[in-house]
Length: 99
Image (cartoon, rainbow, N blue to C red):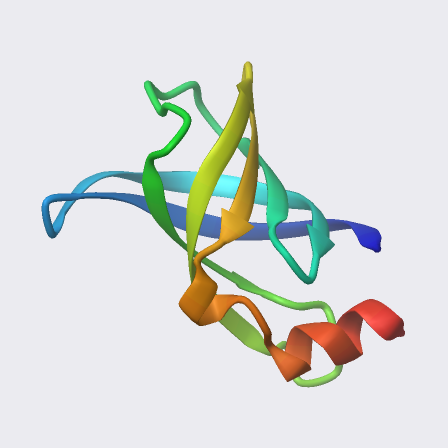
């Protein structure tokens, strides 16, 4: 199940333990397995790159979400990502998706 959202956030591209590239983005849809995001400016990100994303849900608590994701597809400014296995199941996201 995917939920369309419009949540501002940030990302950092992690390469060899260093933050190689960071910037702003919008989360445009959310599922229990990953997110689709739109970058604010075009970057040289590739399938397989590892990002740390951070954004706040638009729930009453403005819950902060910070997760590692892997880029699965790239289409212009849009990136399809999946959560890393360690971040796969999140009860807060599950509850948010059901409401």
